[in-house]
Length: 469
Image: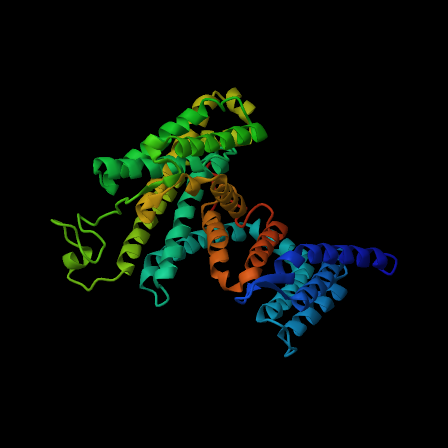
């Protein structure tokens, strides 16, 4: 250890230096307007504390990676004790930052032993049976919690709006999981089908007076048609080439919507989109002539939260349909063909599976659910524009699938909560919000590189598995 200590100190110092250079413009200072012009408000003490924690944290992680358990454990314990001690720091966030750093070092110290123990238990017969039962119970608990959430004491308007947004991305993640997780086709233009569904509902509802429930299946059909249209040019492409073509397709759709003013109203977007109704009743304080409000129909006082609760149950139903369809189709011949295509396309051909039809069905089915989600998005927002469907949306949806675990349905739910909910929950942290978000992503990639739920039961087994005692 003594011989390698200078190298470890140098590595930790370089890490702290890079953190200081990057954090200087994020945390080190910010501008304020006091009415007499802008001036700099420096936060160099905050930055210095954070850089010091990063230095010792990097050193502790290096000790842990070398198998020096006691030095790394002691360093993590000291950092954690400093974080919870009454030592004055400029902000509460720094206390948490120091505590988290200490906890991470301790976790990294015990992680190899814990990971080996978990793997041993998981691969045993009892572990496999417990894992299957645990996944079912965990899914059931999530479902019950989702159904009961609007009646929780904390379910205010902001919380419900965030829940609707998270469920929308859950549905999009499950739809893209068909293309990426099951069929193994890297699609970076998935937002194009999302846009097709949104504009289908916006145009048909504002120009032809069709309702949400009438347009919903049509939006899915239009998006599936575009999925087939995308599928033909990429039949012979794989890997990075497939990703480039699909990304280009997504940008083509966005630019068409941006420049075809007669159809999409261009960059001005489409406004006044009607929301979904409940058996003809509208969710508003006053109804149009010849209509009635939901509150009048139910004979209850009007609340602005009623519309959000209704939208929440709609997207929850659509997401559950997506999940149910995906689980069932995996067990059908087409679902098994998707998984075979993902593993080895050449072997697929040798087995008599048609890769052309397999790819086209994967693109079409995945696009269909994106169209459903896009139709819901337009009905919720009541205004859409091409800027709502940029490439970053495709990147976020793909990140949800990858971070959740390729092909894992529950993993997509957890990843959507982290990727969509985490930045909103930590919005009050201001300048530190994106640091927390980035730290969470680094931790996931460091501890779960294959995704949050990397293990997934195969759809077909050569030998049946005993249920276990």
